[in-house]
Image (tube, rainbow, N blue to C red; front, top):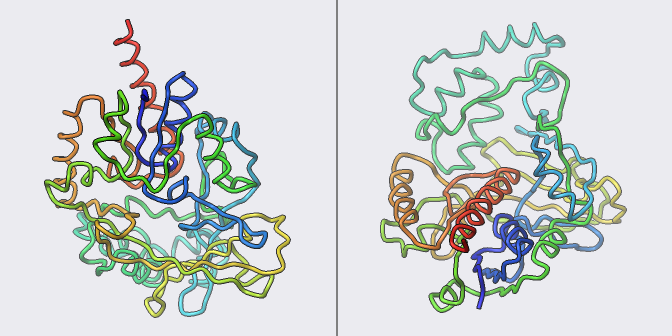
Length: 369
């Protein structure tokens, strides 16, 4: 009945659906959830666009990705400038001269560099995240802005985490609070859900629908963006993730925290960050404000939403086995964050969809010849 069955209506699945639909393919999209958009889903509450599963900000230096997204919507001029709070004191992120001025009482880059170098604990071959961080940014930044936040996020001591979790910790010697260095950055003016609705226009969409063999038999080809271990029945065991829990509260104030995102880096609070959604849109005129509190959580493959893959030695070895199985599957393609067991930024997700689409189309052309 269909040329392609796409499992998962998140960013990857919707992008694939749009590309395949435009190439003339008949597409069926299914998702377990009751809405499209996956973790990027937004909805309007009392005049405020709420990011239901945490903050999602488009940032990229790839003009192809930016132009593609702009065919579906307009973007605002949002600049991500989060604040970190440690025991009631705010610090700017990413680590920049505003941060160093507050930490060390300095005013110039040379003074900041001198303080950081004095704080650094050299380590030629770091064996864990703590040793790696101390060798990159020093003890004061690590203890106030990294250690407790990271331990909340991952649920273990930093000395038990592999050093590969942080490849680098940029130190900016400028008074620039823009978190990203990309050429393009913004938030859709009308929320993300509108983008997904347009991407899926012309496709058959079935929500609250699990993947079954019966549905698989209705398509010539499958694009699977769900959990790769689930597809194979967890035959090598379940891959580990960290999950999240969200609590959303409406306040009878116009402005509660003064920033879209505030990270809480001390262990005294159970949540890692709060999101005040109206600050994603500088033109929002709502009389109230909505905050979401984000709590890290353990993950159960049979009841929780997977968010962050735990790419340690054990899980990477398990994933390698699933990947080998996936490559042996005929007419089934895996992709997206869960299908490839990788943490992906939004632009990386779209680029992966572009590449898979080109691969599928090339193979389809060969068959049709």
